[in-house]
Length: 464
Image 1 (tube, rainbow, N blue to C red):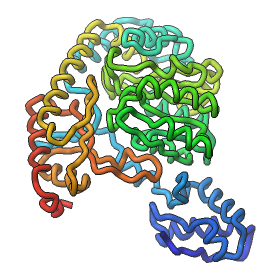
Image 2: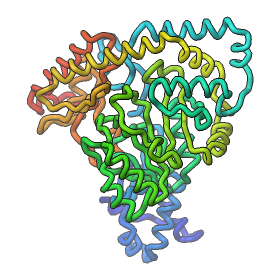
Image 3: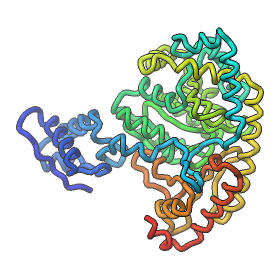
Image 4: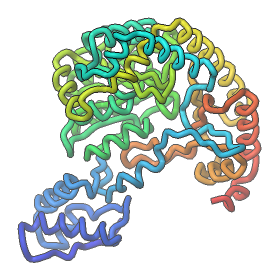
């Protein structure tokens, strides 16, 4: 813990002088990113001021984006956005010989390029469609587009009410819209202790306090959430009930019902992220079915058709429709109509279902291959998933294993980018089975991982 004591100026209220001193210390490097500020009572005693003055100073520094508060842990110097987002990327590695198992992409197939080609060909053949693709339109999308997307989601077993649906520029855009609309800077948001890095980054950029809820193999520990809510309930809770990213945990049915009870008791908005697609028979009851009045459901084309489309949906309660439309309008006026039209044509093409059927079978085969080769290390992976969560053997450090694998031509993710708030980082890897171009390349990557883990821990130290 730092023993830093601020040097105060002589002008202005004391709380503001303390906040200015914090800012100056961070800019000069005296306080480093991730460093904990002194406890409020201790700093109040050192400066001869009240705890209320320190609380107000820390709140001012938080409001300006210099620090972040972590429930039950303290106040920390915030990582700057450009540093924090370097570990959150969405680009495919193209290095010759590298096997990328670090990003959650669908398996490559020529049908993706064919599907887009067919969609654009149909679009170009219709004068009306081309006109619609170049016109301004309603920020939520035209009624025809929303009907098309709702029908497509219905075929996938997802929310299919076009009246509740807004078209977004992908799932990440949906997260930003929700946070900017429903939560004010400095308010508390909650998520699994290990969760999607895009939410962590979005919450940080919105200057929100983050509450990490413990999770296990049945998903979020909702009783732990209830205890946390008894002290201070979050304004919003983000979760992936069918497939937690990165652990693959699935929220049990009993916990889904209990989560809804807690949300209603404390008036918490629920953000349900279903972008990590699973076939309907491998999913549980959607939160939007259990609590339609407070659930916002996020989906996108990224794991089913193609991530580069940047088209998604946000299904919302009726009372939020206008507020979210206003937020979308203020950000970009509308989602680019050309991309929406192309996505709609693709969704209506029967070949799109053929691609999805192939993908489901291919991922099942890849998952079986991974579980077989990693069996000695107790891998965790849910049926239908493209993710494998791999706890490391005793003594192995994830950063060291990651570095050793990179030197051997295999890219993987550690747990660090997925950590919410101040949670300790577990020694584990997230493996994505989709990106390798073939099962043969995936097998080579798996064999490399097994060979690396078979070495004593000190054999990997030199790689860091």
